[in-house]
Image (tube, rainbow, N blue to C red; front, side):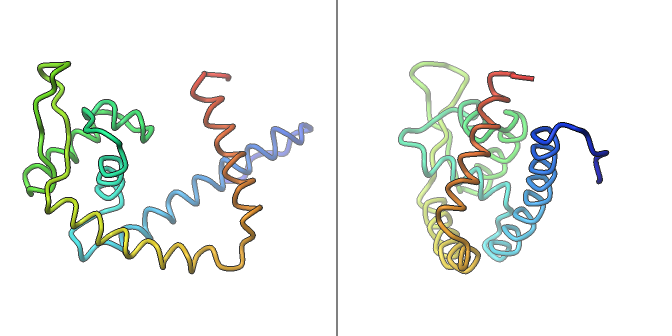
Length: 154
């Protein structure tokens, strides 16, 4: 999708960055799906598992969704699937009667570790030849754009 050129270099540069992020997102989802397909995961399920595994405490679905920048309903659907498969469990929340806390089961922990073992060498191969400084700069730029969107600077 080509955007018409404007006279504003910052606007053009940001537009091109956004378009590249969209393309990257699609490629990452496809690659992630291939990487963990035989584990019974998709990129979406893996992302939810990661959010649960990397959270310092058990969290309700709404908080997990916010931390990933996703809609609660989509994360809830995935959590329900994972509960049905014995990968996560829902615990009582002392602070909210209906918002259960999501926790990995032993099966879920093993599944997450198996996916992480694949991700490390994959990421190493992908990063080869790209300078750390360039990756840090790209991350900082993407973070700045995300933060502006989160405070609704439009």
